[in-house]
Image (cartoon, rainbow, N blue to C red):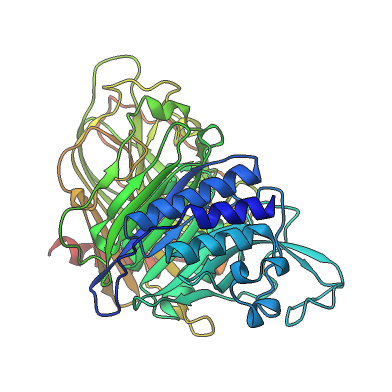
Length: 541
C-alpha cells in the first residue's frame, strides 16, 4: 500500500503553481480543516492529500489538520532526534519511515506548503534507535503528537500534548517542551493540542514567554455549555491573548466534536464554522501579521441554523451548582454578586416572550475550582449570565431538546463588570497566573461577532476590572460574560455545590447578594472593599 499512497501524494500535486507569502508581506494565507472522523487510515490519508492540494491551489502558505483524525488507532515513529536529523525529508527516504510521514512529506513537498498533522506517536525505549529521547523507563510510550512539515517536506518540529483529556493509553509529554517553528514567510508559530488550551503551560506560556503572535491549534473538542463550546473559546482566546489563532477541529457532532476557525486577535473570526452535522470543510483566510489589523473583506462566521444544532451533543459545566447565582427578571436590574475574591456588577434590561417553553436566565459569580469531566480540575473566576430550561440551577447550561424560536429573552441592555485580583506573572514560567476571556454564546452555538460586544480591562492597584457590554439588543443569547482561569489552584478538589433557592419572580428585586454561610467573606473583607472601590471608580468613567 505504501507505494500506491506515495504515488498518489505525488500525482495529486503536479502542476500546482504556488504563490508564496514573503517575509516582507504584511499578511499570509492560512488554511484549517474541519475534518469528519473516519476510521480507515488509508481513506484519511487520501483525503488529507486532496485537502493539502486544495489548500495549495488557494495559495495557502500553511494548512492545519485536527487532532486524532489521521492515524486513529495506528502509531507512528517520529525520530526527530535520530533519523530525521540526517534524513529530514521522509519523501526522499521512504524506506526509513512510516507511510504516513512519507505521504504527507511528499504532499507538502510537491504542493510547497507547510503542513501540520496530528498522530499517535510511539516511542520504543527498549530500542537502541531511540537516541536523544527522554526514556524514564525501558518500555513503549504512546503520545498525542503534532508533526510539522515545511515546504520541502522536511519534518521541522514535533510537539507532544502535555494535558491529556482521558486518553488513558497515552502518556503526557515527558517534559513540558513548547511547540514552536519558524517559516519562510517571516512568521513564528507556537502550537499545541486540544485540552492544552485550558492550561498555563502551554497555552499562556508559549505566547507570553516566547513573544509569539500566531498559534496553531489541533483539536477534537467536546463542547461544553455555557462557557466552553469550541468556536466560543477559540475566538475568546484569540481576543484575550491578541494572537492569530489557526484552529482545526475534528468533526463528530454525535459526541459533541465540531468547530474550526481562523481568528485574528480583537478582529475576531476571519472564518469559522460550528457544524451540527457531519462535515469536512477547508477554511482559508488571509491573515494579517499584526493580529487584528485586518484589511479587505473576510468570510466571517458560517452559521448552521439553530435547528441543525439539535444534532450536536453538548455537555454542561459541572461547576454551575457551585456558583453564586440569582434568577433574572423581565425588568431593569442593577445589582452585585460576589464570591470570595470575585465581585460582579450587573446592569440588565430584558423582556420575556409569551409561551410555555422559554428560557430562564441566571446571573452568576464564581471563584473556585471546577472539574473538567473528571479528567482534571482547574481554578476559575466567572461573572456571567446563562440560560436555563427551568427555574432551578440543575436546568442551567442546557438547551431544550428541540430548537424553537421565541424561547430566549430579548436583552435590550446587558453590562457585566468583573473585579478580580490582578494577574501576576509566574517568574519561573514567564506566564500569567490567571487569564480572563470575553465569553458569549448564541442559539447557533457560536459566539457573538466581536463588533457586537465591547470588552475592556482596567488595572487598579491590586485589582483588575473587566467589563463586558452588549453593543446592541439581541434575542439569541445562551451566555454572556467574563470567564477566567486561575492556574495556581489547578489540581485542588472541586468547589462543593451551594444551596440554591428559587426566587419569587413576582416580588420586588432582591438586594445585592452577599456570600452564603461558610463562604470566605471575613477572610476577604479587605479585598471586597477594594473591589467595591474599583467598581465605583469604573462606573464613574
